[in-house]
Image 1 (cartoon, helix red, strand yellow):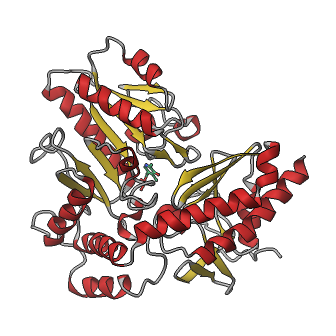
Image 2: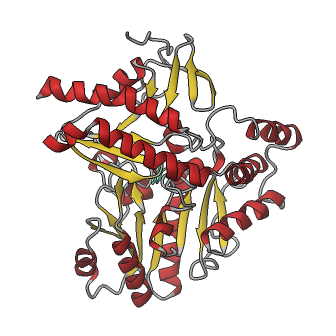
Length: 404
Ligand SMILES: *Cc1c(COP(=O)(O)O)cnc(C)c1O
């Protein structure tokens, strides 16, 4: 069965996405329906955004209540829920202070500014920041410069200077690349690379980088925009290594679909910005803050960290079992990730799976050309995980056979 071309052609919307011919109309839990009435199981969650799924019975009335009171007021005034959400994030991260914005790139842009000013405050005129191969940090000029994907950068030079690029999980390469360089101010990476193909940083590497940053007085800045907010079964993915960053950008899942971004800072970075150094009109507005507060409250009430861990492990095991022959032959290279952030890395490009899965009633994405990425809502049930396996794995097997 093929999906009807339901999405209207877009004569006026800029052509920046290779869209599927699908327009979603509404959702319930982990299910969504398109404008023709076709139902899908949502294993993409709006790209790790819809933490609580769709039409959540606790979130929707709270947001309705907020919208009827005040949506936006401006940072000229106090927004009481900024303090509430900041305290929630501080308690769960062990850090101390929060700046609110609206998107991931904005959170990362603020982190990069913090690192540069950290350097300038120490008398470093040309601060440099260590970034990683295959990293993704956003599409502003600075964050695309920090991104380690030539496709994201192509056509937008000159890039922002002051970045040193190293491979992941190689402490010797990091030491060699920064040897004797007094301009280094920060190390910046995703705890689990998302767009780069679901590549986790190793636990011992995270601890080694933490120690190196302490030794050399660098900021450790961990981009948790995609892997954070409970997705791996802990609030933040780096917490599995028992470390704390100095700066932690968040966005995606923080507002369950309402745009909310944040930069959480520890003592070393919390007082770098002074009034006038940074700001944004929408950041921390009353609707966004209510969405963040309610998302965390509901996640805790409903035990969603534990659910992400257990259903994620169940899903990973189910995928490994269903693809055991393909794993044995090497046609499937690896199933990576933790909790409900999983990647199935094939030995060949697999972009065709996105449409085939949609035709079969399952929403997924393919990233880094060869990696099927699953980042469903954190409310996913074990039965829904089984359904993902039942729909997806035969499609993967069939694709591999076609090209074998
Ligand atoms: C999505 C993403 C970003 C960019 O977020 P936007 O909200 O699209 O600007 C940055 N970092 C990571 C790790 C991401 O996954």
